[in-house]
Figure 1 (cartoon, rainbow, N blue to C red):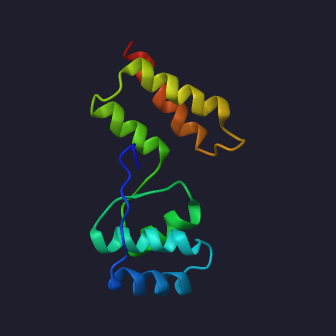
Figure 2: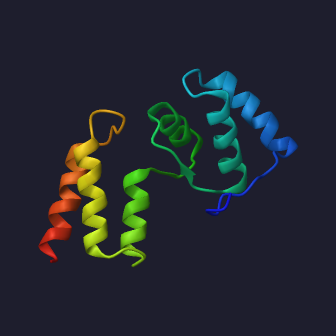
Figure 3: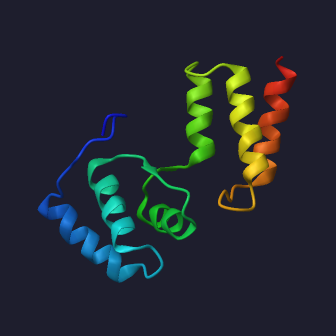
Length: 118
């Protein structure tokens, strides 16, 4: 909570939508469906890297952003400099394949692009 996350309560509409989404999509967890319901009702971008949840969000017309997208936003908004962006991307590449599962090609493109700017 100290880093900007906020507690929220489900509205009745969100509760019933989450229940319907849980019945409709078998792969995302109940908590994933709650997050999807909140994002859909409130018109928010859903932050996730989970494949089944991304697929459900696309079907529901909810915008999704993952780790790479967040880094892109931070870099494009000038919240982090080229060097820090490149370091983050390189660390993701180094850790990729274990707990980190991201599209290697997308990471490499970004790393090449930012290094050309140096």
